[in-house]
Image (cartoon, rainbow, N blue to C red; front, top):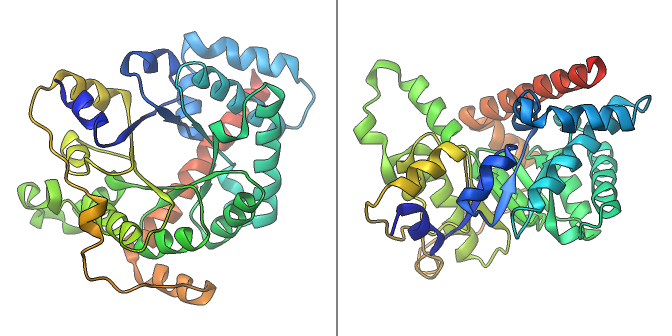
Length: 315
């Protein structure tokens, strides 16, 4: 048995790509996309027709509507391949506007429903800002399920649990990147790998807290830099993995054992935590890594969203 098949025994495997033609061979349950992945995909010849067809069909509409329609086109293609759910992201430029995020999310869901896609097969991705979490809470109350992304800290995860969001995506690799860069020449890779990887430690803490207190929100590790980060989180509810790392797992016959366990987490001595807006903002501020990576992630997604706009306008 290869490592990918072994991992699927403990964890729901999700493909992290807009490249749906590449996806089928790995047989993931779900798939996630974001503006950067869609921008990358539409610049490939095999996906250009999706872009040109969408622009031609909705020429003269607002750029944000055309973008959403393109995202939904990709989502529908993905849902023809995966049996589960697709995550589609709200424009990151709305990350600090709860009401605009809700409006945009509702439109994306309506576009999916117009294509005959059931609401339960779509997760709306929203950045884990305070405003994004409040928007997600409102969407969940309306039956629209959410995936809270750009999540780097324990306080973000706790607030998402309080909001009863469907799923969170803690970013393993970007946490690792920050600590490695911060350590500079003092970084020792062997001392910061596997269970000691700072990104793995963060997701493990969140997973154990959720399971200890019966929080139903699903934990989906994301943004992996190497296979070791993935195997160290075997047993996590879900893991979203790039096609390159999925291929590496599929080619490896090395043993893979469960590392995260919900039953074991219930025996850990932990205290419950609650955040209101003020305490959330303070806790996030006190975490330099999470503050910097959240801001950086939003900026990067905003840049790629603007590039996608220009591609649509200039097509």
